[in-house]
Length: 178
Image (tube, rainbow, N blue to C red; front, side, top):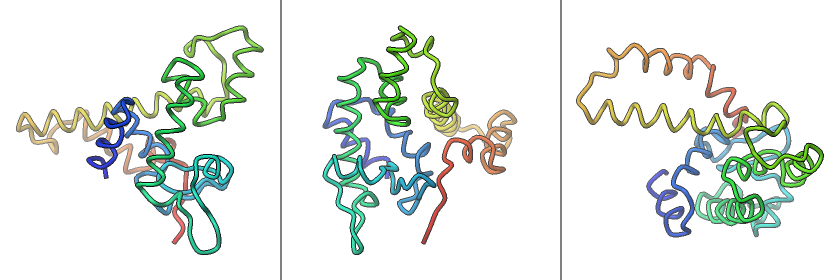
């Protein structure tokens, strides 16, 4: 999944790190579905999916198509970045909606993500993606160095928290429906 998504992100000229949103949003599950009605790899709600050309009817749900949904997510991220000029703010708007982030900025007179007060889930969203990146990069580096990661206490503890539902369940609250 990542090689395909990485190629699409590179072709669009957006940060490669956006691939980690896939884990935060869906846990890399095309069948992920949220209580808010978001579905697929990138967890588009119906209205946002429609806005970015993803069809959904009784036969097909293009939000679950990796290629189509990735193209839509790239377009959406690009629009949000142009709107806010900051990737943390763009990711916040991806999570909560651009209107909520814009309204919060106006009400608080604040344009700095780190000083802005947003809903708890939205404030944590950027950091969840960064945490996923950190865990995967540490794992990659340890493996590249020849380290036996099963003997690396810090990574083992982090993975244990992921498997036990700690960080990953909090990061990707969507459930999977067959």
